[in-house]
Length: 253
Image (cartoon, rainbow, N blue to C red; front, side, top):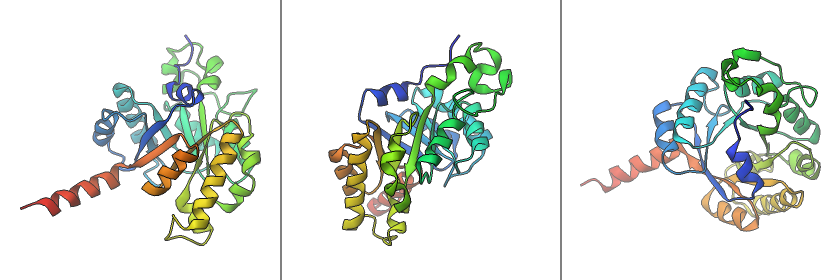
């Protein structure tokens, strides 16, 4: 039996417009609610949300029950951390702060079993392989792992053509908040120089044949989609809840 088909990776290869939501709260219940809401994907955030593999594993199980594809954002570009995310069942990973082609290659290598990469083999002990029930997991897993690297600094944009050309990178996802801060516009994500940098980055990424992604303010998101970005974050569970509560209070008699 081969590794499960990564439906999100397949949809990305088709160039589909894929809209998702960040899961920052670490709540299995919220994860289930969001998973049933109709998004094309959900991202479990282990960078700015809690990096707790046990909780993330439970969230992956919940999302699997809803049919919504999951992305796990790891906190750092380190092979042992990426290995944990993959072993607990993530098939799509987002790696933050990838500032060079060498760092992109390291992220890809961490997601591949040898000889294509350096992922450690947990054998029959890992959830990803069905605890041994998926007999051909190690022989087939490499092809089903989706690697999303984040470009969110001036250094990343300077090396973006090379990053986007790295074999095994499926998507380059722009992080406008960190990019704006690095450019000197920490509190103004939609400053004209930042907007122009994002547009140029999307053109570079798509020109390399890779999917471009982004999450940001509504106006920036509209421009990003018009420019060619297709993996689009529409917000986070925490911010959606906050806004809904404020609206409910404001409308209360």
